[in-house]
Image 1: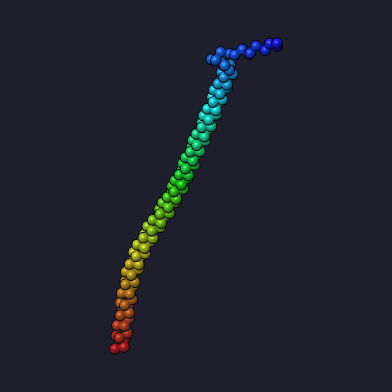
Image 2: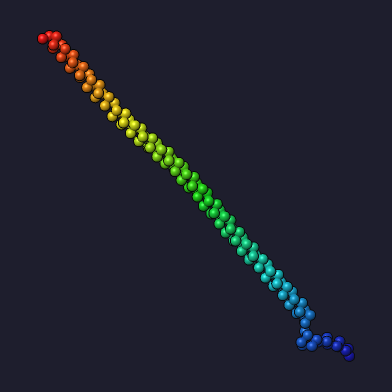
Length: 134
């Protein structure tokens, strides 16, 4: 009779595939750790991108507000300058009108005086003419 080879030795139940299981567990732990780091890194990049975008948007809005404010101040200065010019021209026109009124009044007085003198001369001439004719 041929003897059967002895059955393979069985490992104790607690250690069946122990090395392989521990190795798989370590690999799984490492893979999860790498995955978590990658996710955290993506989250950080996304948060940084959002923050940078918000910062750029705020800066653009601030620059736009500054430009609008600068333009408004320039327009106000221009308006104030034009207003001063108009006010000065108005004062000049009022002074000129007053001066013309005074000169006109003086001319009327002169004309009245001249008319009076002329009338007196004319009356005197007519009187001499009447005397001559009489």
